[in-house]
Image (cartoon, rainbow, N blue to C red; front, side, top):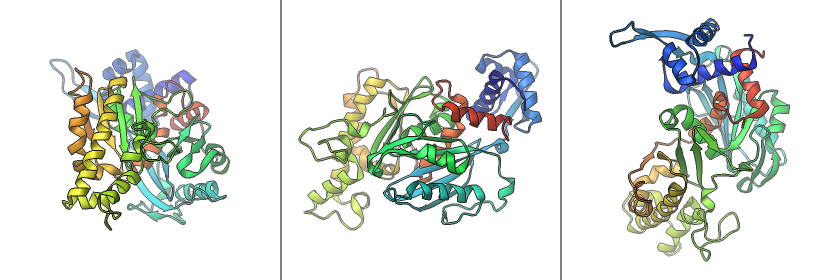
Length: 411
């Protein structure tokens, strides 16, 4: 598909808008993207010709002629997302419209000298369709040859990434310092690669397929092994000067508190991360947290375990209130593996967060979403699928290459 850079960006903006808000008429597209009706008509005709858009039902009109709605053809493209953890990888294959085509996992040792080679091996196994060395988490289509075109690879890591287009990672929990993840994967895979903090990647997914459809300013909080936050302001993920914004788990709670994994004392994560919860449960139970852990014990009605979560929920609520007061989001979304125990957290969290919120913000909506481990990897895939929104240029040259693949200017 031929076209200027401006035309290419406008085409991808049309695709992205339809992918996030659903079918729209040409008139609605023109209004939302501030384009002339003639431009929208021309560009949508081209996109339909290339199999990226399709005409759907007629939208009812009040007295006028019904408008033909246009919808995204999900098979126009796909991205692979990889979530890196301290002991395993989760990989997903996601269409442009958010449909998950397949999910896999495998063991992973980030401390190994061959760690990045093993990461590339796992991605290659999905790209080739072999699945070698991977365990399928979902049923996967055997017709790999009919899969949508691959736009790029997104990688989510529990650490900071100064430039997602370069992809150099500092992640203490992985033992990585200045690890050249993006460079090594691009050299090996010959594909666009974007690398980002895993919570920021989740925010990108929310922007595409979740609360970002109706809110331009929102906050994502994650609870589980660690604690994180991502700030979306005016539709963009705020990354900070060096890509390290959102280290919510390292907000200081008590300078005399327990030692955190970062080396400091009394960080929020030391109280409400999974290790902190386990330590608190052991302290209350004379050195034993129970074979099933505090979450299962609390759900079974164990008073000590429920007290642990209520206290941790209150600590989290006070810290969250401070962040909400500073950022002033429209809505807060709570995600992560820790949400499986949210009823236990909620006892302490709800009264603490409401009590500390600034007047006028106490009615803010705090929404807890259901969770699956593949959600982290879907967030990583959204780094690639979100490049049409990348007005700030966070995806850099890699984003340009993704857009070129999306509109067909690159083989």
